[in-house]
Length: 121
Length: 110
Figure 1 (cartoon, each protein chain N blue to C red):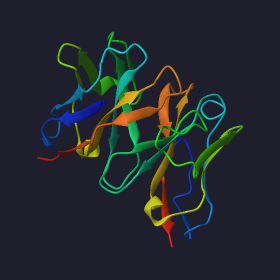
Figure 2: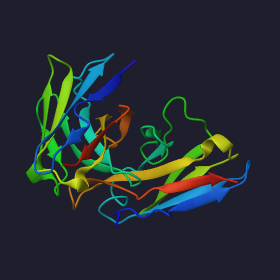
Figure 3: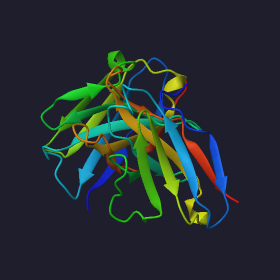
Figure 4: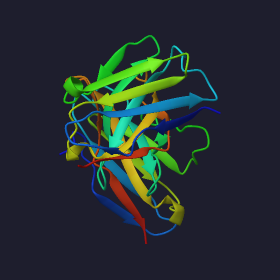
């Protein structure tokens, strides 16, 4: 069945760029019905949507993060990527990728296990 | 401060029925579908209810969702100890152009 797996450095320095990859397996990343999203969760806090991308390249970003985020997709590698620029300690969080029915009911129906990124010098 | 408002905690005894509320506005719950997620400590959230009241395959029918106006509710019937988890509501917000989540409700089974 469809599985998602996040990967990337667990540590980022303040002011630098956080880069993560999500690999999709067991299914197609090019399904027209779905977007692929990134959600984060700071320690002991709630969930925050970062943005979502369609395999065609169409993207939606959380307005408050839009100036610092780029989400891209590589369909040949079945991967989506997240870049968050100029990070601070407030960006410390578990980062999840998830399949997103953005144009429908908006549900994130399949999630990766998440990866913790700590922003610290 | 979350756009969707949930009680921070809820509790019940085994077998009881518990309800968790989620309050929003006309630009989110009032217009769009509400989805609910269940999260156990140290694990990824799991979709529990979508489109206000639909259960994904494999979710027990003890879990049900409803929506009225700008509020939504998650009900858990026949409460079990394994239901102890955090529950989040979420919806698209047309004004903010954002996916908004509730702050989460920690359910304790006494």
